Length: 254
Image 1 (cartoon, rainbow, N blue to C red):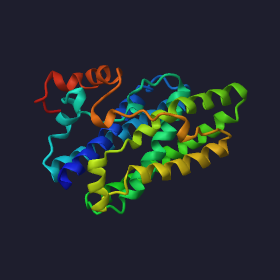
Image 2: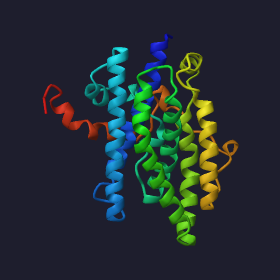
Image 3: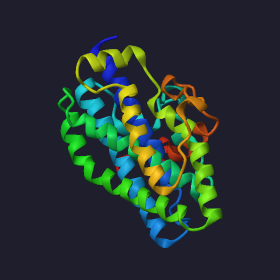
Image 4: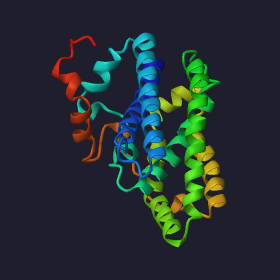
């Protein structure tokens, strides 16, 4: 495997995570529990899909990748590298909020580290996105804390959501040994294990402040497979829906 092959794997996984999470966030448009949350999830959906587009552009311009729109919408399911966590349906608001909390803190740490990457195109992108992701995490923190203090039922639902989401969230850091070894040696990023350790420290402290008990990593089985092209039953229907307009005429100009 070459350095560019390893970079392409990492960027595709990051972009696919952002694309699918963005589409899941967009499904709250018009359905948020209050108008403020309807707007917030819609705004974050735009941000995530924008992040995906920026990463697909880097793939195209720096690594001889495909047109971003075609790459986003015309691949077969097996060619996507998103983690299972972003594929799951939104469910109730507690699940969506907990996924947003765990996913965006992982994103914050990843992009924070990429600001020092030796792969130059990632540094300005990471710098540009830090403001957006900061607001995403502040939003998640505020609602997690508020709902954990809103009564026994509300607290119990948030703890249950955390218990369900945690093994799925560990899949964000599914190792890719072959590519990871190259990327770490080249100083492109610190590796999934290091990022996961930083993420666990951060979310543990935030959960403790909200009164939530973060499950021990050793007590759960991480849900892996997405980085290797093995996906849940939920991805293919979502791909068909989100790419329907583009596939109706891929050569159209808008």
